[in-house]
Length: 434
Image 1 (tube, rainbow, N blue to C red):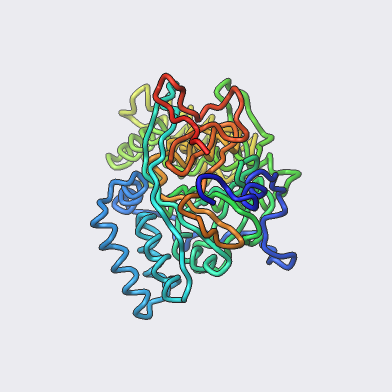
Image 2: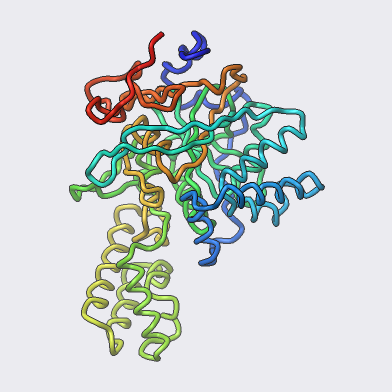
């Protein structure tokens, strides 16, 4: 493969991936649950470090130093599954983890191919499409390195995986407390162990431990409910105010409410906690209102909690009004999604955490995620190695194709809605000549 894909790769890049075809063999281990983190909380310092890493605000020098330290410890006898090692990996930038992955694979006699390419395409910023450039490190995962990938790159990360020429989306999630499973989740309702039967693109969403704990709780609840009742866990209100229950392969994950409390809800919590500290409310309100409402056994109990809070002296009209709004959110979610954890009420969605708009189209979601500056690395998982890996092209259907030079050009699936292609009047790159 030089400037174009080989015939073999072209065949793979244009196939439609069925939901059941991910696993590497018919004897693949069946799993029904992702192991959650051993702890569900995170300090402000750690949360800040993860956010900094996700936004690529850690210098290359520090990343190199960090990965060298981790590799030295791992080669010195400390297993990647050791709790202290896992804690460090969980909060490390993905580029540092990738270095560890490559070094450990090399020590085991395997090669992890990788290359860096600067991508240039259109990315939606609010309501405006703008040209953006971002450097990405692409790496290859093979059957021989899949386990090391799980151990080094699986902590606090959701890997969105899509067939080349994306028309279907999966999530790959590793056990978070030392378990040995890397799960493949389809539509958020069926789960099995991941394999390498097909060529896939993988784009990561790096989270902190608290967010990952919420996601595993959310995912496991959907799997337990199954296809027939997953609407009791998954769903969201769209921009038109309509509740959506039939979540497609992208919607269930991208709309996952797993982040921090939304700003208004967080402000309510702070004001209620402040009232508790001043003595206007009892000690049970010291952590705010949200956690109390989440623990309440039924709507009547939540009403009692709110009524008591509203009687506190010194609360502003805004706080009282927003506290009522928070109760309404709990009642609405509890009614519409009875099998969803109430701890997830009034939280930022995964798409908001990543700064990428939710999309029902897998190609658009993968394009936006890959091009996002919150994604420093992109994986390619395949059954066999590609001898021309550094020149691989990424066909993202209606969004266009990232060619070997990193430009977005019209791909084989291009049509009039090729949203990812830079228009000629914006200096877009023309397809390369044969």
